[in-house]
Amino acid sequence: MSGVLITPSELSSLLSSAPTVLIDTRDAASYAAGHIPGAVNLNEIFTYLATSTPEGYAELKKKFADAFGKAGLSGNETAVIYEQSMASGFGQSCRGYFLLTFLGYPKIKVLHGGFEAWTAAGLPVTTEVPSPPSVTFPMTDDAGDLIIDAAAMLDAVSDPAVAKLDVRDVDEWIGESSSPYGKDFCPRKGRIPGAVWIEWYRMMKPTAEGPRFKSAPEILAECATVGISPETPVYLYCFKGARASNTFLALKEAGVKDVKMYFGSWNEWSRDPALPIEEGHPAAAR
Image (cartoon, rainbow, N blue to C red; front, side, top):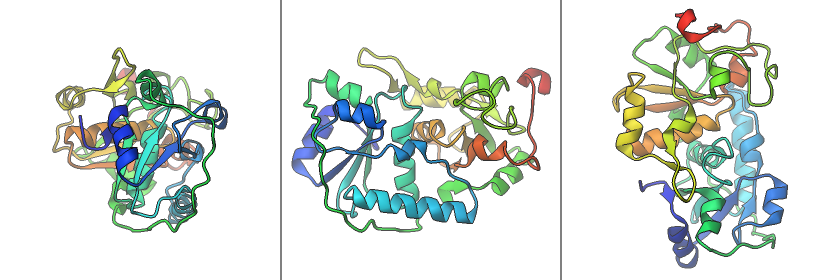
């Protein structure tokens, strides 16, 4: 697959040939232990919990426009985002890709295979922390149609033409746990009514160099198991938009035309008792 995904060798060439800003989304300790030379650490890409209200989106935009500006993204550079590996960070590099896309940034890549792919290729690692010049991040509203709020997701519950795609881990899907942070992190367990399920891991497959995204035909075959074709409108959710961002990238790269993100996801939905949920085992619930 090409497009957004970049291999370690392609990244190495890019770093020496064009203005590039590298963003490491891992936790501070992992970053301090060693990172790609020149990379800026921005773990909040992963940890930040968003709400899908107008105020929540305004706060999200301001926070990350500031953070990406401090990292050195002015619009002229290619942003390259990475995590430890594609399956170990809950999709956090893809969450960075989604946030930059939502903010309208023009040039974004994700390191396919993450930091582990870089080190497996024998490429250099450093503990030096860069001091990039702070710049003004170019804010646009071009990508606002990629993201939906709770009201739009609620409308979709009664619209069978829209696939509500849940990509959480199996214990969350069947209502055993409310989140990856613990069974009772959220007040309610279950699913958005009418949702279909493809666990996010299924968009990837093991390789000798670690997990990688499947090919476009393989991803479309996974989608077909729940009735999603390239023409199906898809509304994605997980717990806070990270695993769903991994799936968002997979679906877009595979040619699914209309994919939107419910970024508030289960963290927001489950906390509003006015919003309907489906509980119990999915087969019994149907």
